[in-house]
Length: 292
Image (cartoon, rainbow, N blue to C red; front, side):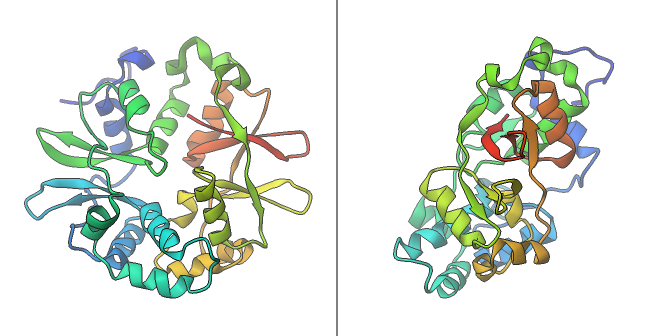
């Protein structure tokens, strides 16, 4: 009932949440993965790892929706407790945080929103403009007939557009600099820095991620929520990025030139299910990052 025919011509403005949600369901598990408010943060991380996600809806036993928890919520609270004095004691602080319950993040730190939800028939452009805006928002919970039925991610939307670039309309051939998608200059760390150092730099600067560069300043990686997927031991964030990448699957960053069009950027981001792309110079050095 909610699936439209792929032969039906639509514009971006006509898209509904259901269009991308049902398309995404053909590519991933349909079962809704969730945690309860009384679950410990450690069990929450393990659930996320088992389901290969980094955000999870919070549902009471009766199905009542309580919000969405993101792995970055847990890491950010741990970094807040660490303070600005350095990284000593990180392992002890992180382990103590993981013994707390999901509900504690809401009651004590007020960091779990419950407005990150949309209905099947909501306008997709409206959802993109008003819900995917919080620093740690990567997913929203989708409702049907008043009940949570699944999750829609930014990655789903980008991958959908990559397969149907005609939805981008006339802007698809427009160079990225003219679309206003470029952010401020890129923050970066090296592979010898720790993952925690990269996350702390991003948090201090109110950014979603930092680039990882080699000795010549060339883009070789990035540290963001995707890099944390599968993590259950926050102590591992003290590893140098180079060592961390040997233990965890960290996606390669998406790099495009400043001459790239919107269609080029979406085509590059879609297959990798990336949250954002980097504009690099001819030497591969990151200049700006962009998000859709």
